[in-house]
Image (cartoon, rainbow, N blue to C red; front, side, top):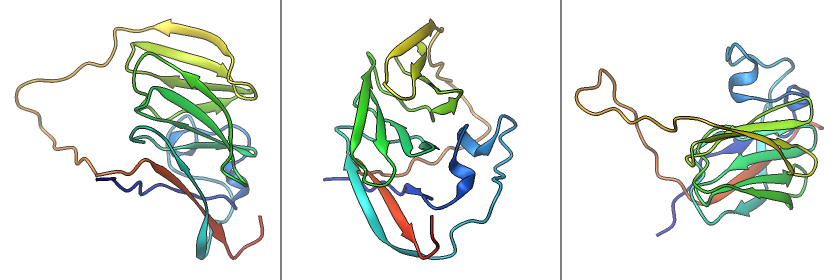
Length: 161
């Protein structure tokens, strides 16, 4: 059975240009300059991966960057959803990418933190980390896990881009 990705890209906001990262800025305040989309009208495109998409996309300029549990980081054309390039790691990518200065930064479950060229997907460098740490025993919080489908959806706004 397939799972649904509840991931919508806000393709009309000028706030999604230039440097892009989770929650909008280095302080992760969730604030974006400019007006949001007032009304969704239809799905513009879909892109299918061979794994689950668990992270938020990064949108910089005309490109959408997304990691997948199929071990690939994808660069997609924001207008068409066509794949521009893909970068393979040795394990799943569940981190949300960040884009700054023409470089995409992300972590993989292979224990590495990567920097790849935003335009080409060519590796600039990688840094070995101790990897993901799982906690055992009693935890003070519960983290919900949502079922996802291997699709990314982009929507069209009634506002001009």
